[in-house]
Length: 607
Image (cartoon, rainbow, N blue to C red; front, side, top):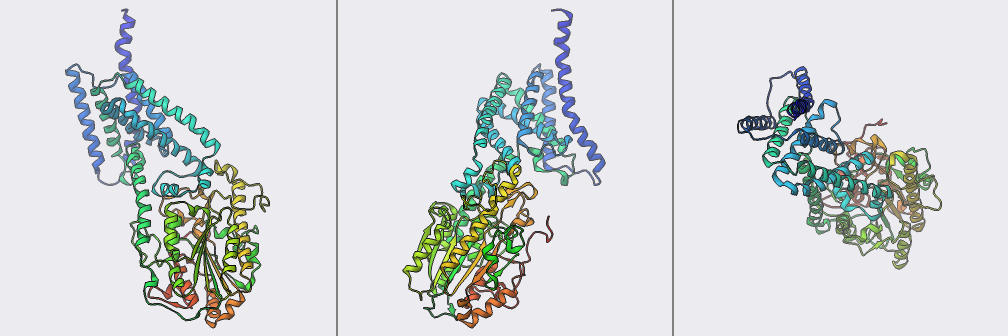
């Protein structure tokens, strides 16, 4: 061997390793500089920092012992560079928050390198059974975050379990499906490269190198103020328990929702009375829980486009509530808050009232209202939503599913009216798709606002088309109101409408109900939580009983208050003069001085 060859063989590996660790240690040095500049309290090690220093110490001791025993306990330079390359790809596509500040990059980078080495050292080739699905999920999160601003969490998964075929297809677009092909190829390539880099490395090398990198990450993280640390610094170690918890909580939330509603006793089982009707008046009470209509997109609330022309023409017969705050961005929780005496934040761990009784519909059924329920076609599926809404409407004489668009429910109502005698008091419960994602329920042949698209492939890039589609769904629903009102013309009827939740329409880069669950206050910080609510009545209803006329006037006087879903249960009882132990006058909007909603809500002048 020539002298030059011997020099390269002896010196270049050493120089390569020195360069490698100099690059990596530049980040902890920078972190230490920031710490020294910012820290203004005595140094305190967290449990994570103590564990990191301990791991770092064990690894360094092992390296020293390995030198005396002439055993290699650190990956060679070529393997180190390969692991660094793998970690850089993993972090850049997996940890969406890694680049918040350049000097923070070393946290997930070091920890990812450590996890790669540790898992391969422990499981060898079986480690690919972890990395392949994990990387696929993380890359899907990367795509979802940049398109919709959302990451996987329990509420997102719970809503995914509940999504209809139409909603799912809004996101499973041809382009997204096409992106699956390079995603699969990328995962296969990364797994092949990992195997190629690590397959001949000894277990001792891998474990000690992994311990060294994990220790460097944890030890350098202790240089930050505790308030300055976020869990995303410790990707991917933080991601696995988060994903497992998300799946577990999603299943738990769904089951808890069903179990809670099933366990509620009926309010009809307790003593109650009605002071206004004796039967045979022919009253029709329509309670419509709509889908996803924001208050600020209704022209009766000042929106520039004529999205609600029929409601705008109703004059004194319409009592509009422009400021109604929905209980949750989840349909089931909203329905529970509307139909029972439950208060918001029902299923999380924060303090709050639980529902103490079942559906208000039971009380109307007890007092000689024949109940009919009209659903969209989603209710034909066996999902959490279907089970909950069926429990809450179990006193229905019959349930109808619209086979197509919501307008078809009008014909179903007409058939019920023809079958029932004109003197029958009827309760119509309606819950159909309306303006639910993907904003596809409108008259496709005569859309008032064009161009449109229900395609959620990249809503930010086609914001106008998506917003046009959303506005069309409200215009379509307004026509539904007109048709139902025309069907009931001449009868004493009252039509109470409230939407279950709103939608994000580009606010802060969010679309649909993206960002769901990321921040418990995000939904109620946006105008997306302000939903449409109104009451429409016929002159015959107002003249039927003095109580009705007085209650309607008080509703009109209270219509400028900020109200919420929790008012509906008690307002429906107060409107018809139904007494019940579960009735609360303070939440009845037909009383002179009801308690307005004062919980979380968006600022008055939100942009």
